[in-house]
View 1 (tube, rainbow, N blue to C red):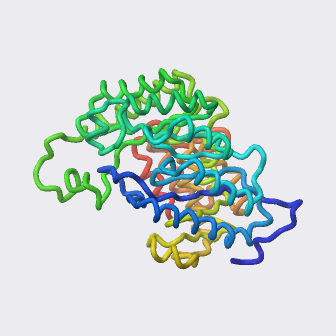
View 2: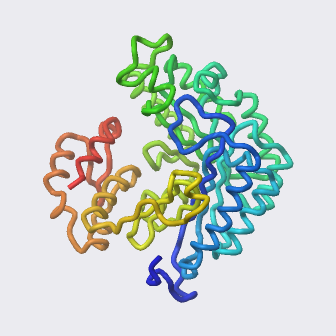
View 3: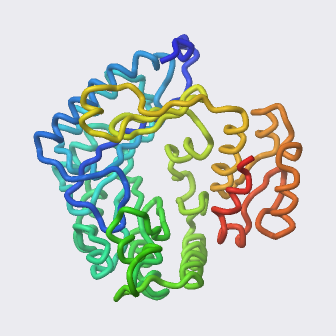
Length: 389
């Protein structure tokens, strides 16, 4: 890595860390994430390798201070308490961790108990993200989830009793067989618990998953349990947004809602193009306008830390990312911030595109910012793609 990344202690820059734990009990039917089952010995060997990677990578980051950390997967909560404590010891040994850093760990309902949650607190984890997906057991079974809603309630209550006061809950909409009323029932069941944050994603059918075989473009025949149609899917989204906003949640990103002051600081780094370092199998990084990622092949990762892919982003690529990542957030893209970053007015680069999208009612401009309208949110992906130069 470039020695230009090194800097004096008094000039420390903000860095976010992502740690990938790829292991899970079994793959869900919709999941295309880099995750798979493995035995206890393989999981421990991987954690040992993560410690070695931290020792290797951290040499280039003495001039950085970690402001957020996210342990994702897979199912990181499969780690034992001792394994998590050891992992966080490696983090603190090799990186400078800011005192008020946001430290998030993904947890699958049913994989945590009082003892493990106590270890998480001891390790410094201060934010939990529970992957619930639905409050209806029949939908959970259809998705291939390993837990029930009752398992989730026990895990959530145990987390509160352990002292966690910053909890996210993941939900999914547009599930097979899901109706508007069943979708909102799930939302209301979660709202009754008053989590600090909710992430609500529409199901996307990904190639290579069991759901693709049922619902993908080349799927044979009609599935026994159909997906909601497009109009119903969009109505689900709008109802979710209205209900959460009425309940006092800030809709700060296309799929994310938070109590005031509880937006996920780690994810905001991604959307604002801050610097982040990914550790573990397949993990991606953006540092000093260099984007690189680890191999997705476990045997190769266990023997080499050389990046599988690496590129230095051109100015054009940085402008494109600024637009399509920035438009994911409800605050949109600031004209002043764009000009400060690139020395060019946003209208000089994207004038015709901005004019066209505003005329179509997909973008709005207010107080020096461009942002998606409600109509724009319905077609967010093609709107963002319009900014690829």
